[in-house]
Amino acid sequence: MSTETSRIRVTDLSGVLRVEFVDKDILDEAAIRQISTELVKRVEAAASLRMLISFRGVEHLSSAALGTLITINSLTKKRGGQLRLSDIKPSIMEVFTITKLNKLFQIFETSEKALEGFGGK
Amino acid sequence: MKASAGNDIGGAGQMTSAPQPVAEGSVRLRENNKEIESIQLLIEGSLSQFGYPDAAMFAIRLSLEEAMMNGFRHGNLADPSKFVEVRWRIDSNSANFHVIDEGEGFDPEAVPDPTLDENLEIPSGRGLMLIRAYMSDARYHDPGNHLEMTFRKVAK
Image 1 (tube, each protein chain N blue to C red):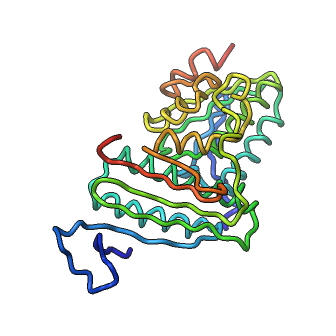
Image 2: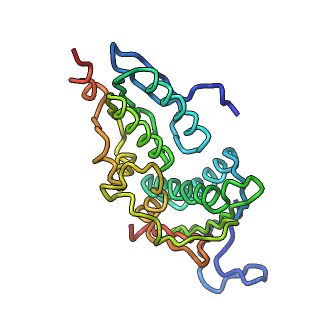
């Protein structure tokens, strides 16, 4: 049990919080719960947070992880912020398409594209 | 992995026709990530031996993960003393899996459609639909605690 080690890397890109994952598989519930707790804390710590979650290096994603993304998305919106997703490889993109969650999330091909017009003034 | 031949009827495994190699096995799991991971790897190894492409391995891994999680969560109600049994039979044409929990079962038709606009923001209920999308065939045996799913290499 490595509950102490963070499973995400967070970088502050002058106003946008970029989140990346340490693991290539985001499947097991304990890890997902931990990620969720960390992200909720981040969202609640700031008003109108702009967050970019990059899936670079992520190979597998379960429906429990999708659930966390939905929760974070709703919470961010409720607090006047915005969530964007990027760097999703085609096999994982299919998971978003099958579940129609590509309609719910703002998804960008790359972090660079997601940051355009997101960094704000 | 226990690799055995197709029509092995109790005897010494003598074949009457051309032998059809099969990889099969079964395991009873508690919710333990290391064990789950090692079963996934074992199955992945067999799939790769039988020439399943990456997309198939992705589909099967995800479906198994979702099926086991549903078993632990919704079937066994996260009771740590209860098991989920996984059985598999893989040959060069298809990969067949049974995932059986110790719960009372459920009516899969009663799960709301998570893709409807009004349900998109509900954070759960997508496991089964992913399984149905990725596997060639997925069905629950009565009373609903036993999921059987098959991936056909050719058809899909």
